[in-house]
Image (cartoon, rainbow, N blue to C red):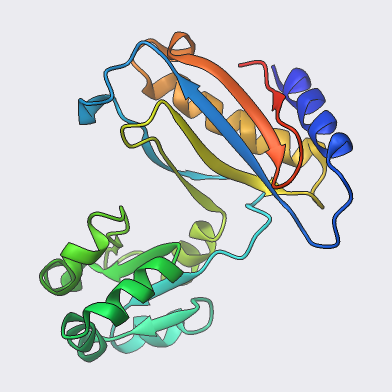
Amino acid sequence: MADSIEDAVSRALDEAPERNFRETVDLAINLRDLDLDDPNNRVDESIVLPSGTGQDTRIVVFAEGETALRAEEVADEVLDGEDLEDLGDDDDAAKDLADETDFFIAEADMMQDIGRYLGTVLGPRGKMPTPLQPDDDVVETVNRMKNTVQVRSRDRRTFHTRVGADDMTADEISDNIDVILRRLFTDLEKGPQNIDAVYVKTTMGPAVEVPA
C-alpha cells in the first residue's frame, strides 16, 4: 500500500502549479455506510505523524510553578490560573485564543477550572486540553503534539486533514498518510469498507486519488 500512496503523493506534488508560497498538503477522506448522526460512528482522533505536519503547530499550556517554567521553553504560550480566570470573564478573548490555537495542554488539577471557565468555548471546537499528569514530561508532551493532527469527521461524510507541506518529500508525506489510514481502518466499524475514496492535494493543486 505504501508504494501506491507514494505514487499518488508524487503526482499531487508534480501536478501542483508553481506558487510563491509554501503550500499545505491535505488529505480528503470520503466515508460510506456509516450513520454519522450517531456520534459513536464519527471519526475523532489525535494522530502523531511520523514525518511531522510540515507546519507550525500552535500549542498553549495551562500550568503553574515548575511545569509552567519548563513549558515556556517549548510552548507558544503558557497561562496560569489567574490568566484562566481572566479568560473566563472575556468571552471574545477566549474565542480568539481557541481559534488561534491548534492544541491545549493543561495540568490535570487545572482541568476542572478549565471546564468551568472555558468549557463552553473549547468544548464545541473540540479543543479541550490534553490533561498533563504529574509524572508526564511537559516538554516531551508539547514536542509530540507539535507533530500531531486532529482527524475529525463530525457529521460529514467528507472531511480533511493536514498531512504535510509541499517542500516535504513524497516519501515523508506518504508515511504520514499511511499512519492515518491504518488508524482509520482500525477505528471504523467495517474498516477499509467504510472508506469510499481518499484524495491528496496541495492547497491550490489538483486532487489525486489515493488507493486505500
